[in-house]
Length: 120
Picture 1: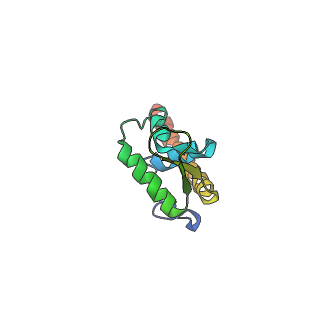
Picture 2 (picture 1 turned 90 degrees about the horizontal axis):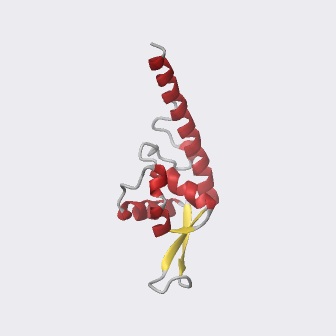
Picture 3 (picture 1 turned 180 degrees about the vertical axis):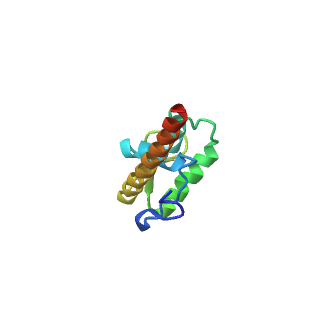
């Protein structure tokens, strides 16, 4: 594994691909800004519906601290308390591209493994 332990291009992209959460959130935010609750509702599409809401919100806070996402308060579209709307930043888009590269490498490794296994 050539990327093991390295930071992707010095951008702080940690190798948490096994958890799959960070790239999933970044991908969803690439499509459109969203509330945390909206993002939580989309986790099932990626097999991550077992995650607790606190895990999602913690990941979003950490990504905001790293500069991968930004957030603003949305007070207009809800009758309840204001909610944060998360948006992907330019740095977050770069990190997402790094994550996609890592996932493609992982996919190729798994495919190679399966090809050898099925060829026996």
